[in-house]
Amino acid sequence: VKIMIGGAPVTKSFSEQIGADGYAANAASASDIAKQFAD
Image (cartoon, rainbow, N blue to C red; front, side, top):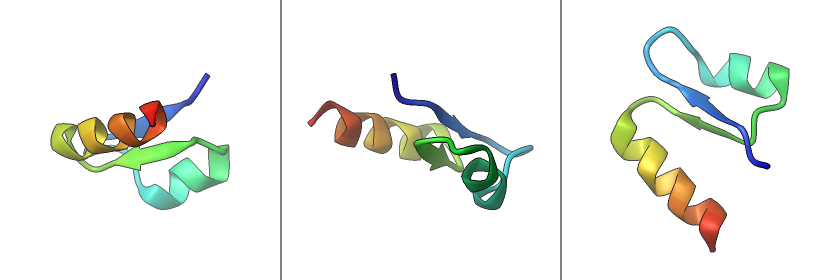
């Protein structure tokens, strides 16, 4: 299971601190990251 977080209230630094597999600043970026996970 991959964990992705993001959006306005979250920073990339925080995502690294909690060990998230992906961080996206917006929905378009999240879609790109999800596609990478699927490959």
